[in-house]
Structure formats: C-alpha cells, structure tokens
Length: 573
Image (cartoon, rainbow, N blue to C red; front, side, top):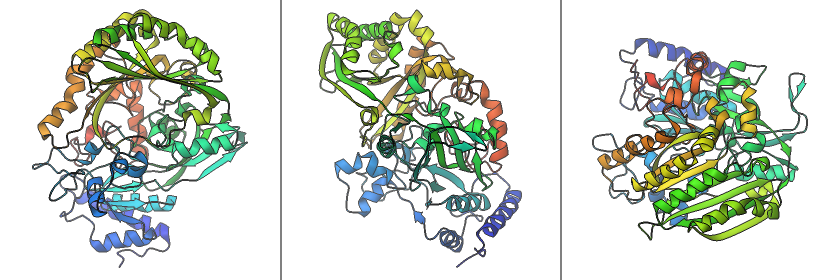
C-alpha cells in the first residue's frame, strides 16, 4: 500500500515536506506525534516508507527483548560492543534504553521478568545503505512530526542516540573506505586523505590505513565510529598531541540535513555548517553519511601498559600529585596517556590505576627511560607497579582495539584541566583525587590528550571549544552500577551525584569555567551552553535554525535542546 506515489523518489520528499508544513500549522500544542495521536503515521504510511527504502525499515526492540526473542544472550554477547552495535535498539550502556521517569517506569533488561517495556528505545529504524534512504527517513519524520534519533554504534555516554517513540536513522551499514593520495576540494589539493562511511569502526579503519601505509587520528575505542558523533564533538585520540583533534583534520562531510537535502559540506561549500559540525556537538546538525579525514604516513611507536596500586586514597592522592608534577616530562615526545583509577573490588581501601601510555615514533627503550623518573618516585611513595608490558610496533596496531566490554549502567561527568592548573597546582590535583575517592567515587578516568598540536591548532576556525586549546587533560568521574533492580529514585540519585558531590571537588582545582568534552560528560550539565560550547552557542544556534528548520535533531544538551523538554518531545519555549 502507498499513501504517496513513490517514483520518482524526489517527488516523495516534496510531498512529505509539504504535508509536514500542513501538520505543523494545525498543532495546538507543539509536541511530536506518538502512537495514538491523530497525526501519527498509519500502518499504510509506514509500509510506503518501507517500500521507498527497499524494505529496510525495521521494528526496534530493547536489547533485553532482543535477547529474549533469540532464546537468550551469553555473558560474552551481552557485554560485547561489537555484538550490541549490530542491534538497532541497543546502547552500550543499558541504562539509556530505560525510561525511569515514566509512571510506572518502562524497563527492559536482560533479567527482566514478565513484560519487557519499550522504554527510551525507538519504535522503528531506517537501516540506511544510501544517502537517499536517510533522505526518505528524514522527510518522513518531518512530514509526520516524529521524534528523530540517529545512531551509528551506540557508543554514547549521554543517551543522545536513542529516544522514546522516535524514528531511528541508523548509519551502521555505511562501511565504505576509500583512500586518495590527492583529495581535491574544488581545484585545491588537500593531499592524502581517506573517505569513510558513518558506519566504519576504528577497528576496521586502522588496519585498512596500515595496509595503505597511512594513519588517521581517531579514538582509542575500537568500535567508535570516526564519522559519527565522535568527530562532531571534536574527537580526542592517542594521536592528539602529535596531530591535533580529529576535528582539526577533517576535510569534508556528506550530510543529510533537517530539510532532507543531501549536502557536500567543506570549507568551500556550506562553510558555516562545516564550521558547526567540527566541534558543535554530536547529533545536532543532520545525519552524516560520510566524512573525509586527512591521513599521514604510518610509523612505529611504543605502547606501555601497567597497573599502579595504592593502599589507600591518601597514598593514591600523593601518587597523582607526583603524576601532575611529572606530566610535562615527555612533552617533546607527544605521548598520550590514559590513567584510569578504580577502587579495588576486593579491598575497601586499595585503588588501582590502569596506566597506559602511547609514544608515537619512539622506541621501547626510550619510552621506558622517559617513564622511569615518575615510576621511581611512585615506588618511593609506597606505590606498587605490576603487569608491566611495553611493546614497540606499527602504531596502527598499537591503537587498534577489537572490542570493548559494555552492557553495564553508568553516568559520568567531566572537566578539562588546563596546562596552567598542572603547572601551578599539582599538589591540589593530588588532593582532589583523595577527596573524590573519600567522597565515595569508585572510578576516575584521566586522559592526557591535550597540549602539543591540539594547542598549536588554536588558529583553526572551527566550533571546537577553545578550552581544548589550553587543556592538558580531560578527567572523567564515572558512576556505574550493576544492580539492574534499582529503584528509579536510586538511579536519579546516581545521576545527580556528579553535580552535587563530585563537581564541587573538581572545581576547587579548576574553577567554575573549565569546560568539558561534550561526548564524555554529564547529561544534567546545567550550564552546557558554555561548558560544552564555549563562546560559540549563539552562532551555533543560528546555523542550526538554517539547516534544521523543523528541529528534528534535538539531543540531550545539544544546540537547541533548551527549547524542548528533557525527552526532546514537546517544546517548552
């Protein structure tokens, strides 16, 4: 059945957008349409959309229901990012699939008995394989005033790529990779580059780049999609101090905008949108179909891994004081360091630091020598070093991770720590760690991903938060839980913990205007306009109105979200 004749395809879009204008004009209260509303698509309308995209419209269920429908999922499957990424309704963190605020709550977990509720999971998904599939989905959503969600993988710590009663646009199947030695924008050569679809994982991109003798500045998690939300928030990586942020090295996008237009976006075409996508936040600008990144000749480097253990929070704070004092020791080598502190589950006092350092273009012996001053001081303080492994290899191999352990529940919050703070207040940073763990924190994750080329690229005209250009580290406090039977009030308490308990401790060191990386941040951030976007929010808002006239791309703490309720479903302004 069809409600509008499909061929030629563009006539479908014109018809849908005209219908959209009519629907929006007659709405008394501006909310998106949900099942049961007069404007919600009929089954015939959904069938017509399905026909127009060659049968790639899918019914979406939560990951718990998906497992029930197939007779169960193993522990290895449930916690695999690779496995979950292939499920349209699954998020890496299961709490984002739940609706704790409904009365009664809508919950569906792996162990849910009785009926599984839909929660915050979309109703249908366009499993796009072409730009035209995306175009059809966006036009349909605009026509019927539907909530839209966009997902590439589900690697999303703010729950932006899922939404209750929404139509999901999935880019998971855009997996083309194409290298060029002379990428052109107009008549200008941009040199060596790679164009990737917005379904290409880093664990596919890095080996492909190695085979070409190239390397790309992408993230450290193997299932991250470089051309997805990652690039839209700026994108830090194991190569940031050497090459800059991912947003500093992207050359072009193919984007489907809120008015269902397929655009080529770069410095010469739609340059305002190009400016906005490079740092203006994930999920707010349209559906990225592909992105082209600058590539560099590959090289050998060293990866150093170890665990540093402290008997209690006081000793650990002293170790992190030392770390802050030594953090500039290796600046000339452009290393990246991940220092993830976790309360030891078998001890109420011990804290373990998973300490990983990537050294680009550095031999194993030189890397080991550079770490020694810090490690010697750690041992002198009573720290214990174990599980130490140092490997020299092609850097593509060093940063390639095949899978991540997910399927858990967590909230987080973060701040960028400037070089100035590290130079002036190393002791205060150590005391901050002690206070965080004494206040009940269990996981504090540090990322030395600033400085070097990130700072030197301050001249680049993009929407990257300027706080990145003075940052040395990005520090996250993670609040996880395993008990899937928590009451909604308990979940809300955990969600509020960063703002009420942990952020005040961090602000004693960094102040109240430190900024945060919006991809790894607090979904309740009250001052998100400046914390995430710095001085650029007004300009970003203007660009959004131009390219998303129907406000289809509304996400948690994204540009324009202040005009909508917390679900992005009803306008409040």
